[in-house]
Image 1: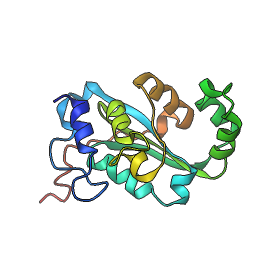
Image 2: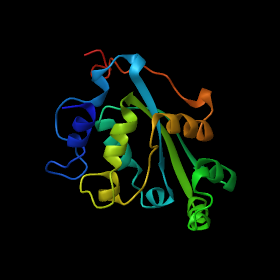
Image 3: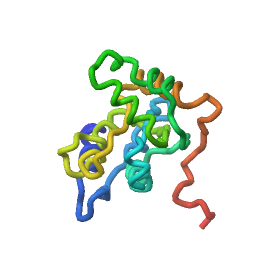
Length: 174
């Protein structure tokens, strides 16, 4: 089974919604040179509904590493940059109003095949076991190239933290 298939399988519920089944994680299957970063934005409804913990937990259960996170009130300039390809759509004014209506949490997650796995985890609003299906929120970049561009809108290079997770199972020296 390819890495996307493993990620899809882990985004399906087993017993309790939002809990991934046991098995290999996405992070352990490639050298560091193949690690990617992706932008995840928890939009105003996710912040207001206090869903951040569940969203973060899902990414951590997949073995992804959080390398940046911030809570901010988005301004029109950032919305225009991020959604440049949607500016001419009839729904764009409503999107701007929505994105500027309350705080958002922008995060950068790192891991092997993180962009594709994130797309699978987010899913669509009718898929049980996905973030959209379970929580009705929309978050994520759609490609590695888009992720690089979008991360640059939301974070300065020095805001991304590089850290080693190799000792993750034994942080207390036990």
